[in-house]
Structure formats: C-alpha cells, structure tokens
Length: 319
Image 1 (cartoon, rainbow, N blue to C red):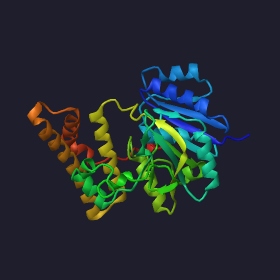
Image 2 (cartoon, rainbow, N blue to C red):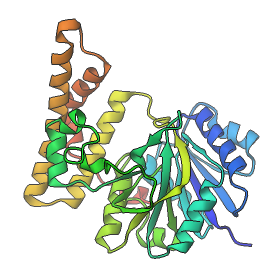
Image 3 (cartoon, helix red, strand yellow):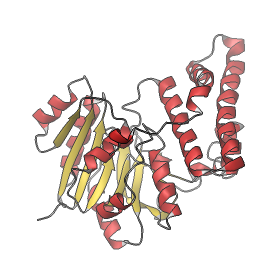
Image 4 (cartoon, rainbow, N blue to C red):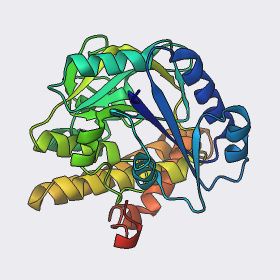
C-alpha cells in the first residue's frame, strides 16, 4: 500500500524537542499511512543517535554541515514517497488526529495548492502565526514606524497578522507557515519546493507568494491542530532577529520591484531603528536597556548586512 503523507522534520540542536515531537506524532497519528524523514543539520547534541535509539522507524538523514532550513527540507523531500508532503517543525506537538484531518481536508478540497492548520501555544492558547497576510506597502509602512508593535492585533496597523480571525474557520490565506504545511507531492515538485536562497526564515512567505502569483491558493483547516512552542532551533535572539530581517529583506527583493522594493527595504531598516531607539528611551530613566532593546540595537548595527537579503546558493548546493 502507498504512503499517504511524508512527514518532514528538520532538526538543529533541539534533541529533546524533536524527540517529543516524534513521540506525539506516533501517538496521535493512527489512521493514515505516513513515513517520517528527519534531516539533522549537523547537530552536536546527540540528536541523530537519540532518534535512532528511540524511533527506529524514522528515516534519519545526518547532514555533515548546516544546510539551513530551505535546503534541508528540499533534500529530505527528495526521499519522500507520500502522496502529500507535510512540513512539521521539531518544536511542535501533534494533537490527536491532526495529520489525518489535514490530509482529509486536502482531499476534500483539491482546488487549493497549500494547506495549513491551527497552532496553539504551550498553554493551549491560540498562536495566530500559522498563517500570514502578504506584505503590502501599507503593512511595511506601519511596521517601519513601529505601529504594528504599538497597535498589535489592529486591523489597520497590524494587517499581516490577519487580526480578528481566530483561525477557527476555513479561510484562504496568502502564506501558510512552514511549521505545519501540507502540499501534494506533485505540486511541491511543480513549484520546486522552497527557494534554497533562503537559509532560514522567509522561505514559506516566498512559497506562498509564488503560489498566489501562479493562480493557486493556500488555505487553513481549523480542525487540524498542533501545539507550537516556537523557536527550538533559535537560541540567540539577536542572531535570530537578524535572520528574520534578512529573510524579510529577501522576500521584498524577490517579489517587489522599483520604488516598492526601495520603500520596503527602507521600511525594514526604519523598523530596526525605531525599535532600537524606542527601547533605549523607555529604559533610560531606569537603567541600561532591557534584553529586547539590546536585540534591536544589534539588529540596527548589522543593518548593512541583513538589508541585502540572503545571497543565492551556489548551483552545486541547490536541491
């Protein structure tokens, strides 16, 4: 019998999280035929050995170097045999029937190209980051001025977060987050998977925008639910935020042109400056800047690097 879904997990220095993820996957997924492919990005914490000992049914690929997220997913997908490909973050816990439900939904709604579910945080509250709206000139302006932070969840000033929607109804979205993303295997190959230019962050936004540009749609199934604790592979917040900004800059450079591209990159740089200065002003009467202000200060100081975006991977390294 064939494989319904190939579950792809990319791990990097997150041994305990990926073991918990695999345990939840095994316990919660009983009514569909699945295979699991874990590509480890050169972790030195015993991840590969631990998976082999505790979950011998998982196919583990140990990369000798850190390929980044996009390339690692693409490499793992080359080994997939399922009708569908499901990307699952290592810092997630699969709830009962979540994967079966997402596959069922995809089969019932084949008119869509990409499918996602609903994510909860570790306390069981809604984590709205399973889906995003596409960046616009307006959303980049509000981000650059710091209004997305001051008016978080505002329909007018935080539009990319799709405020007012609790992810409790099926809805077409621009971007499905790569922590829980399903596509038909054939569609994944048609779109070439992730663009390997993206080392980490931004690859799912790029895919969603390419799907939309080709006339396809992405959709959220509210009944496919996982827990996403967020950030198991990103231990250093300054480094993480610089990569996030680099990913956003790459999306802008790939999908915007002319004055819109210049505006978008300028808005990103403005966002870093506003947050760095604001953090210092808030903390000045009370002592040295807090952790968040220091993070944005680091992001501002490295702006000449991340504003260029990720550079293209050499042809020999592309999946």
